[in-house]
Amino acid sequence: MINKILIANRGEIALRIVRACRELGIKTLAVYSEADEQSLHVQLADEAICIGPPQPAESYLRTDRIISAAEISNVDAIHPGYGFLSEKADFVEQCESCKIIFIGPSSSVIRQMGDKALAIESFRKVGVPTVPGSDGVVKSVSEAVKVAESIGYPVLVKAVSGGGGKGMRVAHNSVAFAKEFEVARAEAEKAFGDGSVYLEKFIENPRHIEFQILADKHGKVIHLGERDCSVQRRHQKLIEEAPSPFLSEELREKMGSIAVKAAKAVGYENAGTIEFLVDEKGNFYFIEMNTRIQVEHPVTEEVTDTDLIKEQIRIADGQHLRLNQEDIVINRHAIECRINAEDPLKNFAPCPGTIDLYYPPGGHGVRVDSHVYGGYVIPPYYDSMIGKLITYGRSREIAMDRMYRALEEFIISGIKTTIPFSKVIMQDPVFRSGKATTKFVEEFVERTNLDNLIQSNHNLE
Ligand code: ADP
Ligand code: ADP
Ligand code: MG
Image (cartoon, rainbow, N blue to C red; front, side, top):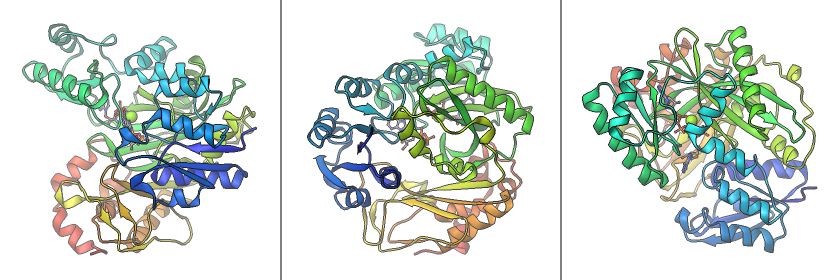
């Protein structure tokens, strides 16, 4: 029985986990860096232990300190959230050897999926469609050029250990290719300590559509439908929604059953996401599996009325999934806007600092997941996401109108945020028509005078 959980994360996801534990009657231990003493999750957890200085390498990534805190406080399990240690197989092995339950899949599956080329290979073998590309890692430029020619340009060079949209370069011809190949390798080495790369055909104008999986320890695997995360900037998601306005019922069923088959084939356990790109014709291609809870999980929660964090905990506790595939009936629509402390008019430069006034929106069909409050100081050491605004209703139209209304109500003063940017997107005819692809943001920024729009729309100073 899980009675106490250590939360190895910070920010909104740490608070989200505290909330789920409270409802389950499970005690929580927050571990935090010196920069996060004032964070809401530290104040709301039952216990809290400081694990070091602000820099992640000195605190949130210090597995020795986190395991020590777990042992001192006698926790049964660790929830890793997303980012940080959530996909580090070595950490999961440490937990396994210390008899601490890691709330996630086994270290071996994390390792297999964490190598994106190996993940593609594993899924391709069981009949999952993948993007035309190299057979795994390409080592030399000369070999890579040959493969790129056979795939046909444009070609994307991708880091095997990539994540968070980093370590990806597109080449449109053989002249550019050699340079992009080297840049991608150097970037990957710097960001992930692993310069291995593989190649994929660059799919033009795709949608990013991903399936949420739940799998228990007894072999039962279901999917909770899809999320459309096509609204991205530099391969990072900004706005996500469920269901996708693009998928027909037929395609949804087909992709969902393939996602379940893929998860079963690798012996997946706990919550996970299978990401696909879908082209204009409805051809779909697996790109990667995320072996953790995702930032955008709330849109699935709102359309399926399921608490994914509680499900993760129950699964880790060895309980049987109570949900059956037939129980997943989706007749609502949900949208999430990530609220980043960034200035949309200064090329989305991070804007840490003090929040003077904080007034979150409310009312019917509105959810705010955030750890900040008036007077909170956003530290400069971490990701710039400071919260998520989720709206939902019976139709996509209602969810969008509600999102616009909620963004208008949202007051965060003292810093710049992406709220005004999301507001103009909510009024954009291309977004509203449901036709946005992963190219949408770039095109939108090109054809829009952001300065004017944001100024005429602004609700914050
Ligand atoms: P999603 O947004 O779909 O959950 P992301 O790939 O954007 O997935 O990652 C979620 C969070 O984890 C983000 O805050 C991102 O910065 C962080 N993250 C993802 N991969 C890595 C990585 N390899 N190293 C460090 N942080 C990562
Ligand atoms: P990460 O691990 O950083 O999340 P992904 O492989 O999931 O990397 O890709 C992130 C995003 O990059 C996708 O959502 C998509 O917008 C773009 N992308 C990735 N692969 C391709 C491809 N082969 N063609 C076109 N766009 C791609
Ligand atoms: Mg991804």
